[in-house]
Image (cartoon, rainbow, N blue to C red; front, top):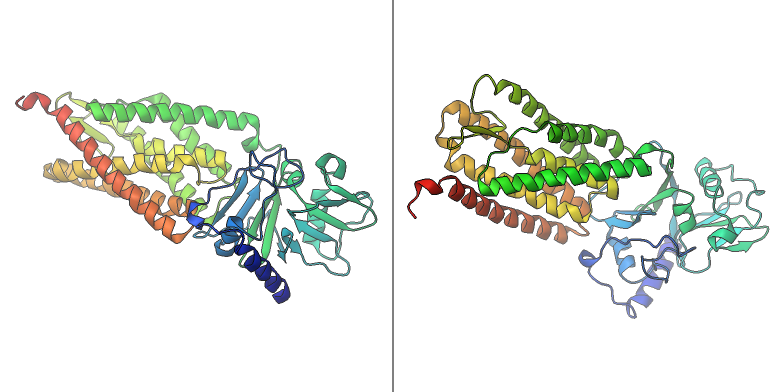
Length: 428
């Protein structure tokens, strides 16, 4: 292992002078081309990804987790990832012309993962016995040979050799997912169930429809907040919110989330379900008596209870978009964090400047709701942004930037709400 590491470091040092290594904070998540067999390549490119020099090598050196699936290549330096019971773990050591290679033994086959040069597969692979000295390696061998023959996957056929190179075919047709731990020299792999409803076309279409509907409700809520209009209770939005939150519980179990992402998913599910449960209960109670409640905001000008549902809607949208992207690291994350943060700062200003002078029962209820929302916002900011950060510096700068922008947006919304609410009482 020491020799392999020294060899890899030598290769990296010689290539670093020719290929400038960029700062990892500026590296995007790589979307893979699904047609450029047999190599892994960036979408729209034809050259194979280079693991041992350049920006991708910089990511390997500093990352704790590198995920590879047909969805793309992503990595994280500030998060961890736990293996599920369906995950198989193998030792995988550095090699110059691939991501890594399973150490061979006298009875084992040679397996390289995602080479950058020739990709080989035995011509008579189905006749070769699977390795039986290591069960995990035998499982990988059996899973790989089911649907990836050399002719169809454009891999070089070799005869009378027990050598197999894992390539793009294993991701697309073999339905395999890989997680590489560079610091530990281990790789974990699992096989996706293509017949699973949560990864089917019908399941994806259902999630997309729910996302579109809930996002229109968020836009409607923001429009009514800006105009100072009450937001009435809506059974359709509430039903879709509850259904989506419940649906996300088993759906998240089929995503290869990092540890922080799984914790965040659980917290958002609990937040959305508790929030909508209190909303439904207080909807029935508000018919008999008009009082200040945890989720209701009485408007003296209209004498109508405005229902605050934006937090639950954003939480569910975060869960659904994370399921579609297989990670919280998606373009939607910063947008929803900004909306959630602006709403939290708006509620803070409303409590401090308006509700703090109300009767103690009203102030305590509003304070409890503020703590609830603030805790959820802090969780999204810490766990969600951390899982999408490529470095500690990027996490700190992104979290600080989103907090500042959210605070300024919350102040702006508060000024608009107060202006639209009290414009008739102010001199022109």
